[in-house]
Image 1 (cartoon, rainbow, N blue to C red):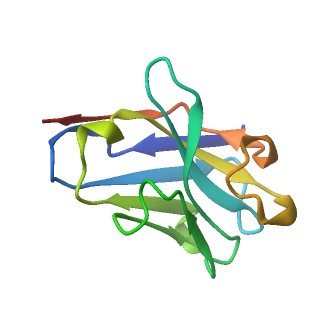
Image 2 (cartoon, rainbow, N blue to C red; image 1 turned 30 degrees about the vertical axis):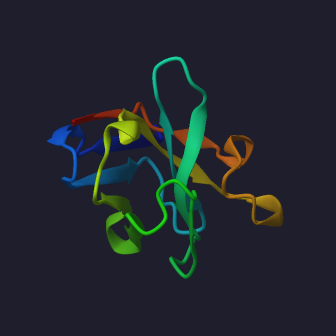
Length: 126
């Protein structure tokens, strides 16, 4: 059974940091791009960051650029999302996703991701 399990979410004050983890099991994702999306109450699930299958290239949403870093440990089948300078606008459920074929470098497109985790809540208080 293929699973993506996110962890590391929680409550943090504005200006603080969190490191989210996404552990994959059931198969290896060496050939998959990994992405993070987030969904705030009443809003759509939006792209946050993604990293190519070999970790060579990263992509970020404009709203998080400069504050967020995505990385992956292929040997551990795990990827990470380091988030700094958090603000209440970052409050959302954060989802990890894995995609085998990302067309036209559209790493921000949900439709190209095949597997999704259950999400981890991030709440930033002001």
